Image (cartoon, rainbow, N blue to C red; front, side, top):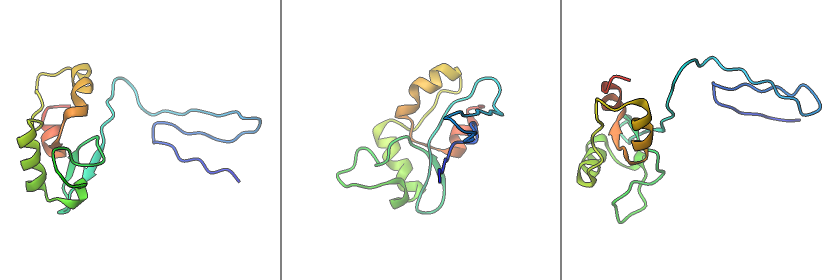
Length: 108
């Protein structure tokens, strides 16, 4: 028995002899972001598994939103340019540490 898990953008079926069928409902440009949830259940954007700039192995789920934003501000990773193009935004995503609400305010 074969089990396949894929993102909503892709669908695959095992139609025999290694054939796959790709289905996409996405049109136009899009960006891929990693969303995690803080201990107090706020969604935040952070592509790294562990929080940077700490002496401990802490993940997003180990801190509150206020603590997350404090770390983000201390590291200078707490802002996104509202005039960034999708290409510039994608390029800068690895250093972004903001709440999902602030990320969406950029006007994506």
